[in-house]
Length: 152
Image (cartoon, rainbow, N blue to C red; front, side):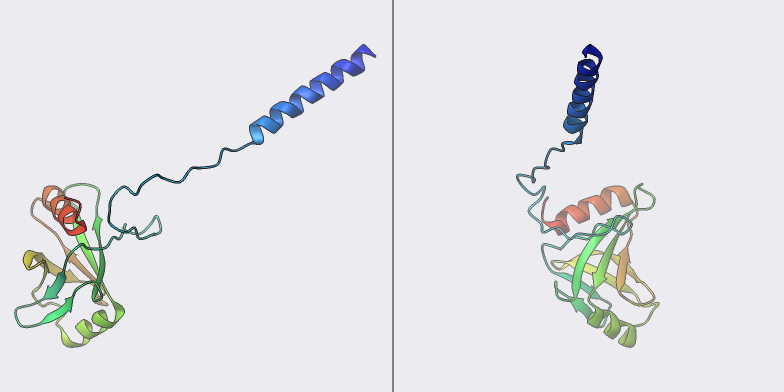
């Protein structure tokens, strides 16, 4: 009888520990967003896209190809070290198609933010992404991105 009671106590203790370890605490939502800029959910293997807090333009010496948030949807910082950092700007499908049709792949494009020159832009083959690099990429790109997001 003592063996049965001991076995029952052991079984009860093991099941109690198992039940306690199976409980999961619910994750509490963040109390506030890390920045005031809206967040764009992006897959882990893609750049972290975010909206601009101002007017971006893609232009060359003759034409404005894209202007404002309807044309240049969002941007991202890409690269982890100072030699690789760059800013990428995503154009709407409509503006990308128009730029591909009317522009020149090797044209001298540049991006401006609120009328201020950011830098020379290189377009992807489908003209969907405009990329800007900088001489001091880590300092310049981080400073530019902070300004464009409106958090600095």
